[in-house]
Structures are given as structure tokens and as C-alpha cells.
Image (tube, rainbow, N blue to C red; front, side):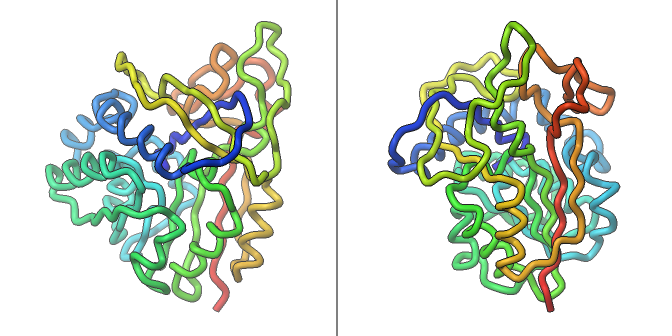
Length: 291
């Protein structure tokens, strides 16, 4: 959901899956207003500059290319800053998210900007039922989205159903190797502690903070998340009738994923201070629906 910038969940323990949608929705609902008020989402810049784009979309531009005139859907759009940025690039965008509080922020921002962007409340797995099949030229998913979904196979099937033949998926996401790492250690070592592959059971954590700058405190801190291996993601898309056209790994990510061991560059991206080439931080994947 990204939020992107998402959608960063650090893990502590395994428990049986309960109502993961309701639990995660409460977490995102409570954080929506804090994210909107945080300088990290730059809402004031959107209002002041009609050409302003989110940091996430600015990073994506070289691979995203021209999307003018495309009919696009942004899955797990959170408060809509990336969705509106894509609309500013000329796409006709719809944002989808499970959090009504996040969507209220997104709709308010779009209205204040006069942006012709629609926002729809839905779980990702219900998106085809809500929006209709074969409607979109572009499915966009931003950072920190897949970790909130229990099945990457079901996600890939939704992506393929939403797209017209020849339509395109664009996703930049935290690398599954990054999600395996233990939280920052005093010795600076990178230790793979959590699952790389998708498991049936969620990883469950009490996460009292959030990934943006804020002085807010929160009550709904329980989260359920999953990892999905890169091979699992690629295979799921191939099995859904997609053709992989781009797969690029990056040595940076848009949030401080390992506190105390990363530094921020001039573009607002974070990477390891010590030998960042040791770790793929994120990746960009593009795929087209076979005609």
C-alpha cells in the first residue's frame, strides 16, 4: 500500500493468521492523517507546484517512460500522491486502497488540486470485481505493497485480469532479500533472519511507529505481512499470462530500511553506508499482458 514507501514492515514473530485485512486496515487508517501531515509526503509541494511529482515517481521516470493518455490503475495507492503524480504525467488514473481514511486524504488532495483522479475502496484481491476486467493499459504498484498480501499468485492473476491485452505492469518494490534482514545490529552485520519465500502464515509484529517523520503516537500497531521471493513473483506473473520485459535491481530504497546503517542521497533515496553493493535494496519489474 503505499504507500510506498511502504509499506515497510519489520518483523518479530510468527502467529496464526486472523483477520489480516481488518488488522492492517486499522493500522493504515490511524496513520493516514500523520502521513498527510508529514514532510515526507510533501503535500504542500503538490499544492504549490502544479508540476511537482512524488519522490517515488521521480525515481521511476527513466524506466516508466511516456504514459500520456494511458488508462491506469494504482493498486494500494494509500494517500494518492503517487497516483496524482502519474496523472500529472498524462495518465488517466484510478487509485485503489483498502483504507477509507487514506482514501479520504487522497480524494481531498485531488479535489484541492483539481486533479481528475478517481479513488476506490477495495482489497487488491477484489479489484477486478470492483473495477471490471480488461479495462487498463497500466497497472502501477509502488514501494511497500506486496508485503501486505498473503499470495503473490493471486495478486498476479488480478494484475493480468485488470489489463487489456498488451497492457503493462510497472512495479518498484523493496527487494525480498531486504525484507529478510534482522533489524539494525550494533555490529553492523547484515543477518538474514526472516523468510525469503512466501509462507502460509503471516509474520506478525507490534509496530508502534511509522516510516515517515512524525511526532504522533498510535494505538493500532499490530500488522500482518508476508515476503515473496523474486522467483515466486516472476513465476506468478508468467503463469498469469504476463511476459517479463524489465527486471532491474537497485542499491537504494525510499525509506531508512535499516536504521543507523543507511545514508540518504541527494534524491532522497537510502542506501547502506558500508558497501551498499552487498545488498539489492529494491527492484523494478515490468511485464506486459500477452495478446
